[in-house]
Amino acid sequence: MGSKCQQGALPGREARIDRLQRLRAMVEKHEGAFASAIAEDFGGRSRHETLVAEVFVVVAAAKHAMRQVGRMVAQAAAKNLTPVTLELGGKSPAIIDPSCDLACAAPRIALGKLLNAGQTCIAPDYALVPGDDVAAFATAMRAAMTAMYPRFVDNDDYTSIVNDGHYARLARLLADAQAKGARIVELGEKADAARRRLPPVLVLGATDDMQIMQEEIFGPLLPVVAYRGLEEAIDYVARRERHPRLPRRSGLSHLQQGQARVLPGAPQRHVPDAPALRTRFRTRGRPAAAPGVIVSG
Image 1: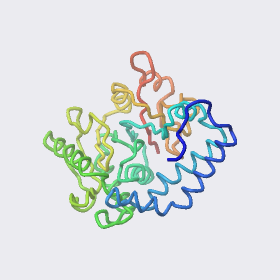
Image 2 (image 1 turned 30 degrees about the vertical axis):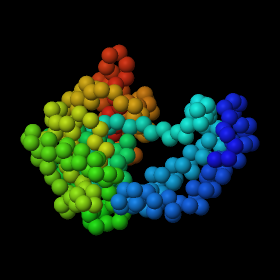
Image 3 (image 1 turned 30 degrees about the horizontal axis):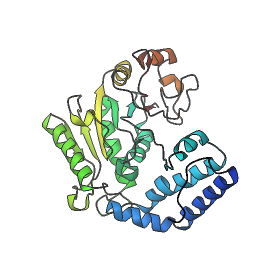
Image 4 (image 1 turned 90 degrees about the vertical axis):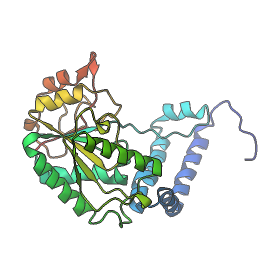
């Protein structure tokens, strides 16, 4: 590696900017090679998803760093010459309220769930749906996902599960849920274990005793939990362990960041009052896990 690395004072600003510029130029120049290498690692991964989820992120981070955003994190990591990528995630629910326009909401949830075949930390992990709307939600999700990917198994734009161990884990989650009474609704062709191609699956009637509801899924499986009233849905989320995801909020400026997000265009009148949310989303005297997404009309 040439001269031995020496710990001590950080390089000057000009040197750091130069390195960031060279990093950005290198990533942009070789983005095709990166996409090919990552696709080989996955055994099949969409080039477009690699560009969005990997290349764009690194380039954007370099731009931000050159504007000195995140400087404290970079400096702390630099003391140990540690490359850092920060991503916050967890078991993030999507809450569908009774007035929701499913034709609008389902494609947005599908996009979040199927990017990289659900293998992102900020994918919707499960959906809370009014009991009377579960069948309509399942129909809308099937239409949205199959419109996005007419085929899954033989589609270069749909990503494989990253490795055999993770594929086996997802299969175990499905088997456990089915054994405990869940209804498994496959939204595409049969899975191809040899190529680790797993089309999306809805898990209807998911309950807390199922493993799929006890850990982050990180894959194209979407449990659906029915609720009777929005207060019940809020309580359901508030009782659970916190996770670090703080979704960007839109439309409800009076709520604290990280408590709720409303999809663009959702009217505020369909969402509970801010005091109610603040009360419900607290546990042990501090804010609880963010509900992820509240989807209204």
